[in-house]
Image (cartoon, rainbow, N blue to C red; front, side, top):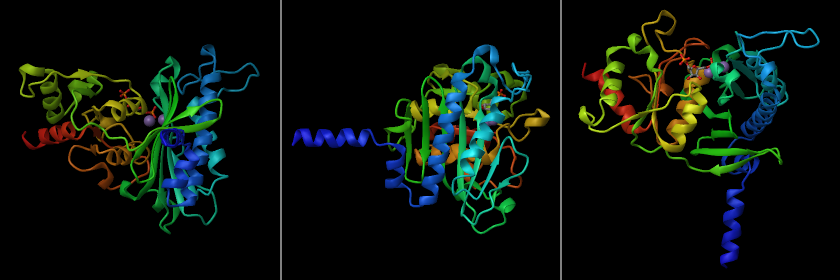
Amino acid sequence: MFQFRFNIVLVELKMDLENYLLKNSKEEEISLIVKSLGDAAIKISNTIRSIKPQESISNNDRKLNSDGDIQKPLDIISDEILISFLEKSPAAGYASEEQEGCIDFKNNNNFIVFADPLDGSSNIDVNVSIGTIFSIMSKNNLPLEKAFIQNGSHQKSSGFFVYGPQTTLFITVGVGTSLFALDEKKGKFILVKDNITIPETTAEFAINAAYRRFWDSATLKYITECQNGENGPRKKNFGMRWVGSLVADASRIFNRGGIFLYPSDTREKYKNGRLRLTYEANPIAYLVEQANGEATDGHKNILNLEVNELHQRSPLIFGSKEEVLEYKKSYLYL
Ligand code: AHG
Ligand code: MN
Ligand code: MN
């Protein structure tokens, strides 16, 4: 009896992505799209690992290779890999950070895919975790351009792959958030943790503090109070972590809680934040909500924000519920 139970536990723990989708995803098309994204991520991961340091090819470092060809930046290569897998999947269309407009795969299928093919550009050349973020929505019978400006509440699945010490995947298909790790030998993503819950309280914040002079007074108030620790109004000490790759900072928050902040600031380019709503903030927000966390622009839930343009920016604050609430309060009591 004990042996029998033990075996069931092992089988559950070793569930791979395909079986997880079979069990949890209501739409076969979505399962097939996610499977293609997983295969694409394995190829991106291998490509990153096979690049020697002297061949580094980030976006601001274009060189000629030994054949005299222009080396393509890794974010473009990742975009091409995603397209090559998705065009063979049931996806109806694709939009990404690396494409001005959306790509029509010219079929009558139902679901569209958004992606940040490689997130964490400043970390590409320095061997720090980077990743691929994706979001899947129904086309809802809209013309493709219109389908790509639906708000985040229409997402059916979202996730991100992290290319770090391990290649991992955080994913939701609407029934909680789960963590998978790539088994390199089998070439499969294996379930590590189901029903992830972001702890409601935390004493860790993540923000690029070098921009302090550009922050609005609410952000300044919130962060100053955290920094003042147990002597300040928060009456507890905080620590700070900032990787500078959204995927890596999010990965930490899903594992042990925390609050991430990329607010709007007074720099002209970032007056509406830096991160992009459709392929960065929305997919992360969906995963966060499915894990009992909260994601806001400071005033409204990210998933309720209106989308006017595919590459629209948005402030993004997410993580442990209690801290996100505390941040929102700093706008109310100014
Ligand atoms: P991307 O590489 O796709 O352009 O995204 C980088 C993002 C995000 O990963 C990170 O949180 C943020 O930019 C860092 O911005 P700063 O360099 O302004 O801190
Ligand atoms: Mn990004
Ligand atoms: Mn990117």
